Amino acid sequence: MSAGRLLPTAVALLTTLSAPVLAQERAIAFVACPIVRDTSKVPCWLSEYRGETYYLGIQSDVSAPFNPPSLGHMALVEGVPKAGERICGGIVLEPVKVSVMPEMSPECDEVLMAEPRYELPFEPPRPPGPSGGRLAFAPPEPPRPPEPPYVARTFELYFPFDGTVDFKTPGALQEIWDYAAAIGASRITIVGHRAAVRLSDGALIEERAGIGRSRAAEVARMFTGLVDSVEKLEFSYSERAELGDWRLRKVSVEVIP
Image 1 (cartoon, rainbow, N blue to C red):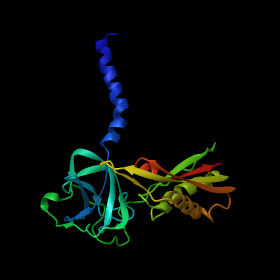
Image 2: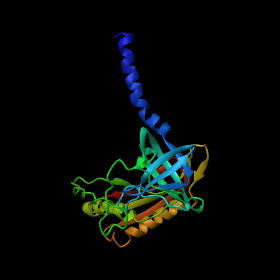
Image 3: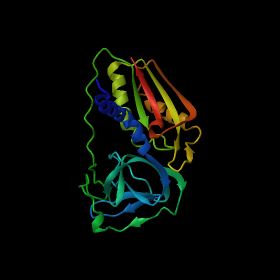
Image 4: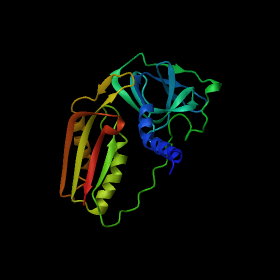
């Protein structure tokens, strides 16, 4: 085969192999004030970094995948910009993870009035205001019961920066408990992790010491009383701040037949 015919194949292979690396390089991470922009439908959340505005998501309720930050606090924003796509005047980040920083920042209080040019390009899942008992997103379909032979399976629970168990945790734990009950698990091991983030400006921020232990202990406590048939429930944790993105802020739960 000639070199001329090999070249396109080699280029295609290189492009395929480099895609995850390139995606990682495009990711940005920064700490800044969140901004609320009103619209005729629901408010949207934005943030600014290095002279550019980024769209984070819309105001919804606890059933939504995106939970907005809070005015009065800085936010850690992690995401991948989508070139050429804007909502509410901001570049779309997808996927995006937003963590409310615990310290009070009273300067983070910007609310922008609605403007016709910044209308949402989609219909929100529900109208603005209190949900009135109707959540924006329907609960997911229950998974099919596992079939033998049963195998050990590891589940990952993710957390905001410096965050521990919150209102989303019980829903995430339900899948784990359902699997443990279905296979008659004999042991469940829980491992809490602590992480650090390298921001786009080069700064390094670490989660507080002890967060890995707190996450593991709180998740283990939520299993207490639900695991009478499990022979052993144990948890451990890492105090080393692993450098990476939101995927390292987690608790790993292994369910063993």
